[in-house]
Length: 324
Image (cartoon, rainbow, N blue to C red; front, top):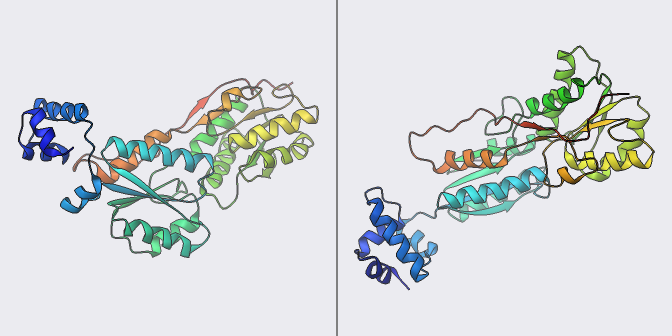
């Protein structure tokens, strides 16, 4: 099945079919619709490899990722693929060790060897940003999750999200609030800790203890005993998985959530609504972030890309109550 058959079915020339396939602006919408309908009727599929040879364009974007098993990077990759596909692009990914500069460079080299037209770099670590700054890349690059103040790229406002979480606890009367923090080498963990401290300071409250975690539910569970002994009535957990582990660990110690200790998480993972109790958390709009990234790489000339941080929202459920 080829262009000739599509042209015959649509009643247009092969050149017109070619223009539709290449998103040429000078094709009437009625003609474009007729060609697309003929393609659907005939089950025509574009041969992107052949098209790349003919146009010298791959219509492919690269994603450089590390820690893809974590919620934020994993959801970002899926959202980037969806946004790119909607824009008529394919996505290929290269996975690197964020702590190894050679691994990051190798990932970039792999993507460039595939003739990608742009790269989205998921850069949640300062080390990744440093390596990107040291490498010459011949295509446009946009970074995601590089949320540290002054870092380039697109991100969700992590500081604002943390402040929403703390405010949700303070507004119902909590004054002794602990922070279950993410890994120190993650920019987003750093920003969430900054927001935790900033909101408490703005309210004149003394911060409770900061307990280190590693994003996993296991680390939240391990933190439960220390938090139960700290004399706090509430916890801001830097992600939902750690909040889940903390809830389970506290329950094993006979500490009820939210009656004894209230908890707010971060991310609003799909399971958060089904925790017991359902988790109050901060939602990140990964779809919006991905759409901005793709638009920055392949958007129409002259159409601005919003580069201010995406604003997160608080999702109120049942893991927060007034302190006793």
